[in-house]
Amino acid sequence: MTSEKINKNELQNREIPIYTSMGMFIIDEIHFPDNTSVHDIFGGGGSFTIVGSRMVLTRKESKKAGWVVDIGSDCPQEILDELERWDTGAIMRYDNSRFCTRGWNMYGDNDFRSFKYLTPKKRIDIPDLIENKHLLLSKSYHLLCSPERCVNILNQLKTLRNNDSPMIVWEPIPDECTPENLDECLAILDKVDVLSPNAAEAAAFFNENEPETPKECERVAYKFSQYMTKNGDKSGVVLRCGKLGCFIVNSDKSFQKWFPAYHNPKYDDFKVIDPTGAGNTFIGAFCTGFILSDKDWDCACICGNIGSGAAIEQIGMPKLTFDGEIDLWNGKSFEERLNIYLSRNPEIKINSTEVLKKLQRI
Image 1 (tube, rainbow, N blue to C red):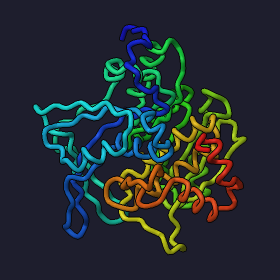
Image 2 (cartoon, rainbow, N blue to C red; image 1 turned 90 degrees about the horizontal axis):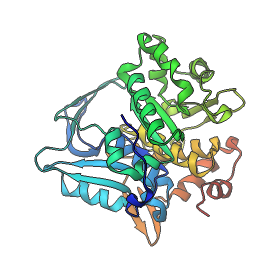
Image 3 (cartoon, rainbow, N blue to C red; image 1 turned 90 degrees about the vertical axis):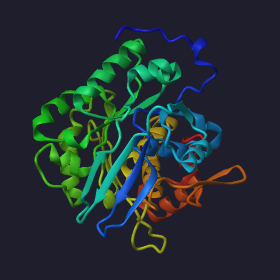
């Protein structure tokens, strides 16, 4: 791809994003082991990362969550209403000649999940950013893709941005997490800021089962961390470990720490309904928190866990409502969730006022 200069006069007064998702908007149907199912569910990796970012941003900054949303002729009005309520920096592309990208999900025992597309997918790629040049100036991107596609996107971004390097969080696509792709994965880790697979995906690169204890998770994370050299101690592995929370280790191991999951079964408000999208929501919230806090690992991981905690409280997206100027996600503000999370996990050793200041919310 040839270089195209970014003329700021062409940005049409659009906000420069703090976070940009290159994931898709998908409408899901979900089938459960008891033969029940739900349909027309607002989903997609791109959508979930954006809701995570939007939780961390205030309403005043909401348009700094950037993405492209392809809307077909069959999009339910309630989903369109919810997209409007988020008030993000979405580029809404309407095309009545096609259906929305739709997905089929099947859940089974022992966290089994199967997925397939029901309609042709419309992937977001570099030409979509060129078409919407403000997205090319984003401070961070989430890439959910193969190693080969990751390198291709990064090379094009480098050219288009005149060697300016945004923050990149790479999540290897699950099907590519195999021993055959390990060398290719390791070879590109010096080009990304954060590697964030879940624990099962990371272990699969080594033909291992999903790690079930903190020590096993740490051992897997260490296998990657030494290759994360892009930005010194501000590059690292953020391993998402389900009910254990997340483990972060940076490139030189000077920062390594566990952050518990938001929901804990010992509390009365424990609510885990559907894990779909939790990992993507974590990453959107993590990225946004990382940029806002000037790359503070504590703030970013706290944001990630708050985001994923809200994502699993229902089927589909957490519900946004308003109390005056305050955003409520499933009835709780970000600040309320932050206070709950930190009060239950004092080992994190940071208070909510410090976090809110670093996130530029107060």
